[in-house]
Structures are given as C-alpha cells and as structure tokens.
Length: 601
Image (cartoon, rainbow, N blue to C red):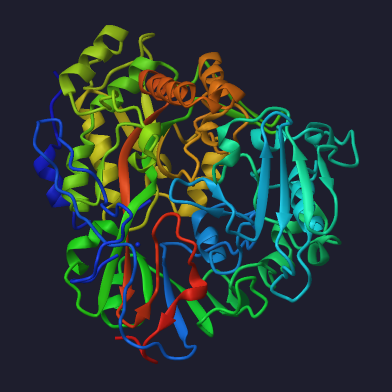
C-alpha cells in the first residue's frame, strides 16, 4: 500500500490558503421548494447538514422613485464583455447580459417554455414544426422595431460558415435546410419561414421533449439585424456594436463600459413590459476575497456570494441571504481526444494518456468530495453522484451511488490493470512499464482554490499516481478555458464546472458535435443513448426517463468525468432592495426591483 501523505484532517490546515436567491428572519418562504438540498447520508452513514433559504426579497418599506442599484459581479478575472447571446463564452458575460438581453420565451417552474414571454408558440409534433408569434409592438432598446427578421437573423448568423462562436450544434443541425446553409450550399435556411413581421415557423428534422424545454431545441434570442447586418459575421464577436454599444431587448441598456471592470446601465423605456422601476444599475467586478467586506460596508446591493466564505457573512445584519439549488455542478474531466474544427466534431483518441477506464475509476475512488463539501462549504454543496443536479427531479438516476473515497479499492483497480511501481520511486508506471506523469489543470481564484487542488493531487499520490499541476501553478480563468478549448497537451485532467441551463439534456456538453465537450469523449454507446434522449420516442415519459437513467449509468461506468459537487448559490441582498426574486419559473425580473432608500444600509 502506498504511504498516505495528506488526509482528511489536513484539509483544515489548507483552508486558509476553491473557487473555479432568499433570506431574512421572519419572512415567509415561497410556495416553491426553496431548500438548498435534501438531507443526505455521507459515505460513513452520517447525515450531512443542510441550509435552507428563501428565494424572494420581501420588504414592507415604501419604495423610492427610481434610484440606482449597485451590483457586484464576484470574479477573480476581468470580464470579456461580449454582449451577444450568439457569441459570449462564459458565465460572466451571461451575468452582464441578464440586464440587457431577454429570451423570447418565458419559463415555468419545471423549466418548460411557457406563453408569458415576448412570444407565444404552437408546437405541432406530427408536422415537426414550431410556429412563433411575437407580441405586438416589440422594440429594441434603441427604439427600433423587433421583428421576425431579427429572429431569422440570429439563426443565419449562428448557421453561417463564417460563424466563430460555439452555439452551433445538434439543435441547429436539426433544422430543415440548416446543414446545407452551414456548408455554403444554400443561400437560405429552407426550414425557417417568415409569414409577416410577427409570425415565423421553424421545421425540424426530428423532434423530442427538449424542444419545449428552456435552453433546449429552440433558440430564443433574436439579434438586432438593423445594427449588425453590415458587420462581417467573422468579425462580430469583436465588433464595437457588440463590445461597446450593444442593443438588446431587456429592461436596461448599456450606458457606458469600462472594459473588463464595470458596466453602467440605464432604464430601457422601450422594454416590452414597460420601463423598469429603477433608473439604472452599476455593475463592478469585485474579487471573492473582498466581497464580504464590500457587502458589510453597504457598497453594493446584490452579489452572488462565494459559498466557501459562508461562515463569514451568514449572520450579517445589513443584508439578507437568498438561496437556491444551482443548475450546475463541479467536476474533474479527463482529456480523451481532440476537437476537429474542420469537421466540427470531437474525435476520441484511444491512445490518450487517460484512455484507460481503470485509471479514471481509480482516481475517482481516491478522493473524498464529502470531506471537501463539509470542510469548505458549510452545507452549501454536497457530493455529486452524477451530472444531472437534483433540482431536475425525475431526470436524476437515484440508483447510482456515485464515487466515494475507497483507497483500497482504488489501489486494487490499479494493481489489477497493471499499474505498478517497477522502479521503486513510489509512483506507478503504466502497464507497459513507462513513466506515468499526469498533468492536472485547475483555475486560480478564491482562498480555497489552491488547497483543494493540492488535496486532489496528494490523494492521487496516496494511491501511487504522480500528478503535477499543469504549467506548475493554478491557471487564470480565461487562460484555463483557452487551454481546454485548444486541447493543450499540458492538460490530462482538469477541474471545471458546468452550468447546465434549464435543460437537463446532456447532449450539448457530451455529444459528438458539442464544442463544450472538452473531454472529447465519444463512443458509439454514448452517442446511441444520446440519440434516444433526442428521439421522438422520448415524448413518452417512461422512455425519456429510462434513457436519462441509462446515460447516467453509462457515464458512471465509463467515467470520462468525475462529478465532484452539486452546488447551491447564495445571494446577498442589501435590506434596501425590494422585489428581487430568484425563484425558478418567476416571470418577474429586474424590471420590478425597487429600492426603499437612496443609500444602501
């Protein structure tokens, strides 16, 4: 047995050195289930603690007229500032666009499209069509009409051979005529038909239940054709129209931008629900290390808080806490191939360093994510048993036990697979007798990024695996994802996180043509199961849930990804804020938020 060098007790010593909405006493809990997580049993049978929050910021004080809300975007890196749903690449830009951009479709509490948004729709399963009708008199934030030409324009941009973003995938390929348009063989997308300025129909090759799921088969964001039609598609992501003067359909519009640092918004009087209550919003990038003091000092009104610092702000008096299960999970991914840009697909490499499933399983059994959740997240995260967060309910395969720490099992797997220490240096060689050095990439940011990365490395060392940090240190956020996308040879295994969006369908993250499938994991069985999930047969709920269960079992057995933590998100909200609502399925957004005083508490 290999010598154990860093155990559970040692985690606490490293805590000072990870990072990758409803609170307030006496407030009534929403009728929506607002618990962060269900009580679970850890591997040793002990129950883990849970923390419960409300999801609406109630406030009985009278609101002032207008006012400016200050929003802290908690980040360790500057934002890119790509104000385009078609081109943005990370969650920071998505967060910024939450004020300026809005989907055509509203979403209910089950994450299904509803009829309360800017557009209504009619789905014809037999004809495989979606008929979209825009509401009357929709306008962009610059006052120009928003029409079906703008809806079509977004599809034409994403489907263009010149498109440089990552949105194109199976959902777009499924539109009749899109493949021909993408290949440059057609000048139009034959499956999209405009009837008039308010009515448009999209025809699909196949349909499945995801088509009615938010974030599923229907792209919901129009694109301002009047602003961007003369910009070359290959240049759009960097264009000033996107970076400096974006036009959206949300409750606010950009007034000014300090690149990478802050954005000032003003009320959009053309917003389809009417002008928002606030005069404006100012967003600043604030480091995780300082956000608690910033909120304690009343410098900001709203912030998504680092859960690893929960103990330092849970008893604050000038702000309340909102919380919910996050549509996200953290994971360890193995690099198993490369992205073929010309063919727009992932290519599996059977000779990749991490291609042996035994090696991956052993690394999964070597680590204790229950310990990490308990030590660093105070009941706000829990050991993840799979890649579909529990907030999705029936989609989750509850029969999967997940990976838990079992060092003896991990060592036995490696022994049986032929990974043994042949030269006596304390580290295992490959079954072929060659040196095995595994490069591990992890992001910088937050006080616990380093200790958790070192914990994983040393737990893998405990089973005889030599693992080193890629580049010799933690990697800055943007550089980290640049390396992942480029399939940099410095990365064999990496620590990442995914927001799943509102659709549990995993095809966009683990499909053959998914650019976000950074593991590059592809095989016939995985593709076949994903095809089941995306088939018309999946309109039968039993078939659908069986297919989801089968996929989760497949991923557990083949472990291209080790799911590590299911997450909760916590929002600090200054006590002068009113009507801020993070309940899933709410139809109230930033347009209804008000302030009860000129200055924050």
